[in-house]
Image (cartoon, rainbow over all chains, first blue to last red; front, side, top):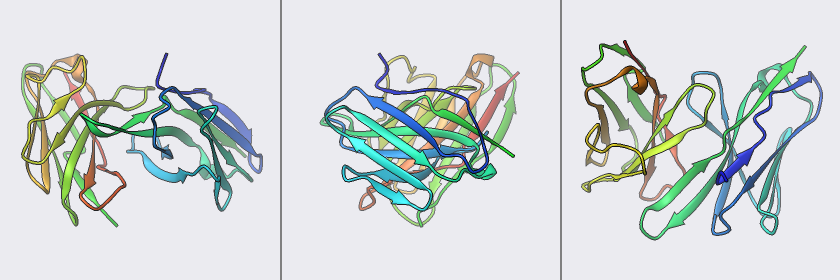
Length: 113
Length: 115
């Protein structure tokens, strides 16, 4: 079983739609959680951190459910520029290795006119 | 904000040659550097973690003699792909973490093609 699992998609949605991505992680010792966005052939860029209380940044809302080991990202009013791959990322502090980021496989979003 | 400069952005090399990729932290001290590899349509896979002045810790399945990592200073880490083969063709990305910076700053990536 992968440590961080995401539906690879692609999610094809029209402009203006609301779309939700889910992610599950297997290590209950995971400490912090992020959503990254990666455009084709580019490096990942931090979209937002995910907090237990849930957090919102404009059209983006992220939620964390530690009991279910589940993270979500909601995008409202999708724009063409939102087309990208969204990576669920989990950070764990290992006594030997220190901080470690584990990436999900990514969910591809395509927003169409 | 924190910036990591990664070079080269693209490189094509002949099979059997070695390629060096550099990552420099421009405005902070990178105490830890992570090196990732990403194959087409796949996610980033951690190759190794290096702390300044220490030997790198390699992930299972990554050959330390083939992927040489040097992190001799707080602002520079290098990954050398030795005796490259076509199956080493991939997108290599570094990510730096500073002493006081909880976040991770990614380099812009290096696309390696071995012919």
